[in-house]
Length: 485
Image (tube, rainbow, N blue to C red):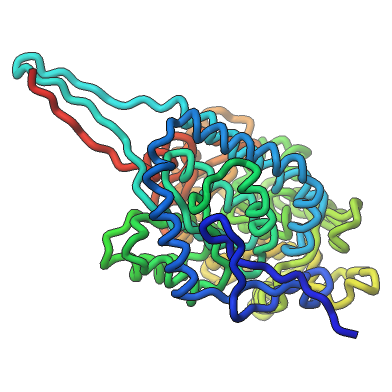
């Protein structure tokens, strides 16, 4: 019997355009190919950029209110199809349907609504030079064609986080989602016309980084690139974009610490740190992967934390009783497992999860890419397990003695995206927040996000910030104007 696959097409200039060659896309929960994704290259990117350039003058000439109406309409349409999007995101990415239904898709809707609103409230600067008879003021103009590259962990969530501010500010876009998770982007394209998005304002090209991504980043008519993904890929993007002096916003990896002091509310801390370590299979750049616990409560914390992790259920993404689904790919699962093997070879103790707890999976999921929540202790801070981003359901726990030592350990990696601090001492949390090298510091909570605030990392976790005002600044050019009167 001939298997039928979902076959995606590029979206260029308001039309779906078929591609000559395709890439296999897998259902991570079964390990089977279910979708064919365009393997786009230079030719497709060229066509998309041309469509975006053509659409730019009329789209940028619209008022912010007119553009906001279109964003709100698109948000309403995605929300009306929320369940279809959630099911598709789960099947494509491996995450649970519950997670997609409660986080990914609602946040994608909110991204459009938030930027539709925030674009109406920006003001510009003005200064007077009365002694010279001059008045100075600034204006902000859209840049042109924005190149947007989004990752596979939160596919529609992070794609819309880029598209919404880009088009709200008056740019047109060429976006490339991950070739591993392209379905929800393609589904959104089907709503563009009904939402009133003019042809060419949003173009979506599917394909790999080395072919489609490279053609987009190296295109002379794409003056800015917003990328979320790995630090290694960002280095390639920076080199490729350098000859063109492009504006870059790079949101990269994390190796995020949680620092837990003896006076922490342990009930709240353990419940939240389980979520921050293992949510979305640990495949969130903001996940906690290093936990430092004050020595006086270390053994008590570890015992309770392991017990809680054993209750974090991994299995079929469609089962509402499960907390985690499957990892994105066979290769990624093997990479994550290799870190656990490395930890064991270095004398680390695996308390639960990989190699300790067996998963009881339904027959149809027996070839899926599943891994239980895994906790490791006894690893040196210099180990690759403690230094490199694993991006899976694995976290390491170690003790500390003093506040200074906690800061030193927390800052002892090349990344600086997020950190969490647990303490009831208001002075201590302020001191720690100031000293930790991280773009976001949460105290006594995790993943509480006000989209008005800057989002981004320090050190190897990225360049630039995105958020209400920051995204607007990135997706516009500022111009200073002086009038002598």
